Image 1 (cartoon, rainbow, N blue to C red):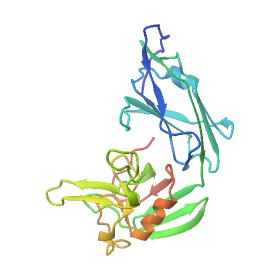
Image 2 (image 1 turned 120 degrees about the horizontal axis):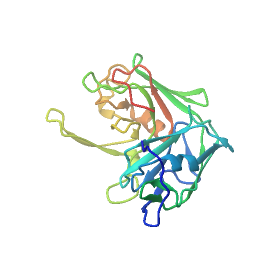
Image 3 (image 1 turned 180 degrees about the vertical axis):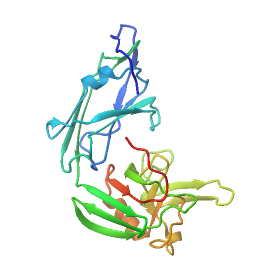
Image 4 (image 1 turned 90 degrees about the horizontal axis):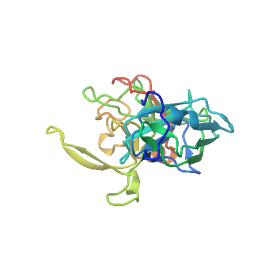
Length: 265
């Protein structure tokens, strides 16, 4: 995280442009993070954190910023904001970023101001039980579906911990239109297990590449044995339902998966 004392910007300060991953008017799950991207990495965060305000239904959100290398193409650094626990459901989230002219560190100055207005939907929380091989999906505290799963095999275990829906499907190459059927291209160059597949109804839940997705090839093990490469395998109909049900930012819990604990902040 940037540290040190903020220096006042000078006329020759290098501009730091800030953009937001989220867009106005969108609805997200209760686990989402506001993501600010920087095209040049600030070396001091104090002016940023003092200036920016985030509210929930008009009241201070009481959260914090976490700084990390950008996981999105084109960014040098990013800052993620969440409250201490999940956002409340059915809430209005607003952010004010009056940054233009403020110092981003010695010789650096922000060159834009930003605002954000988004909302949260219902509280979607799914819990995946590695003992029973079942996923239980709730909406605002009510169970809406239970589905059999197959998690990671012994040599490719699924991470334990709290995960958040990051993306649904992916764009087709060379454009901004999504592949049909929620497809994501998944490739393995392992000499003993090569594949190059378009996997339908794929919901990304970790930076490391875990998805909840359809696995028609694994029907015989779903609900009884863990045989995947770390992803959560579902029957096709269940995967399609989960894809259509999910919001980016929805929470997926893995309290007893066999892998190491998923890093979080």
